[in-house]
Length: 246
Ligand code: MG
Image 1 (cartoon, rainbow, N blue to C red):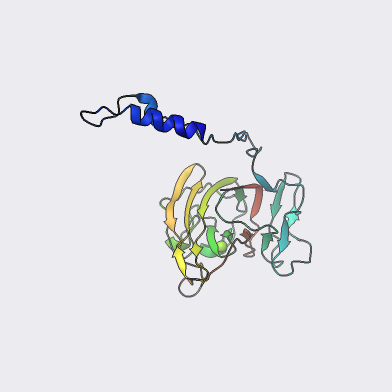
Image 2 (cartoon, rainbow, N blue to C red):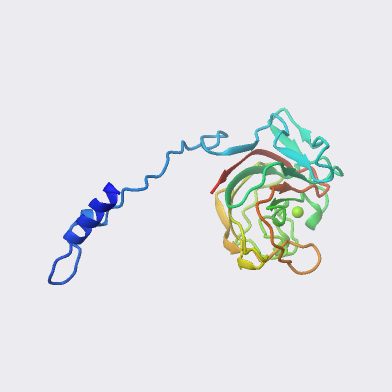
């Protein structure tokens, strides 16, 4: 209250009677609220307020999509990564999320096999529904709205920023969840920005609904939901996954 009063006093005092212009630079200073301090990450260390979803030590934050009571049977490696165990199905976080900043690193197999959608395919599903495609799109043509960093079957990435197979790549994803009213009607679509290897590949892209393999996106009302990683039968690896709730 004290701050507010001081602000308004300064604000009104700074108007000149003749022309209504602000002449005092202090009049436009805002001091409250003050942003809280977050210690930035460094190397593989996440920012201080991040939720660590995977750091190589285990699957304590994850469950299997097929059977949430069963242990995740993707493979842990000594280099602090995990790799899809084909046939065991997708895995998803135990926790549910809304608006967030998600960081993860992925690697498509060094030994290239298959082509198009059959090469290094996986995916990051935001809120269990909206897939940011993971694919080996390094010199591997497929439909543009299904290549790496596409919003699957919806939005083509701005550029192809893929590293060669076998190299670690980063996704930094900024996600605004869709808003629904109490009747389940969409009030505001979700939006997503994706930075791949430091390159913007999706810029505030509107999410049109669920990312379907066959057919059009569907709109379905939902609240917070898990992050899901896809088992598409390829030996895609992940490491260093963290998330900040926004
Ligand atoms: Mg996929």
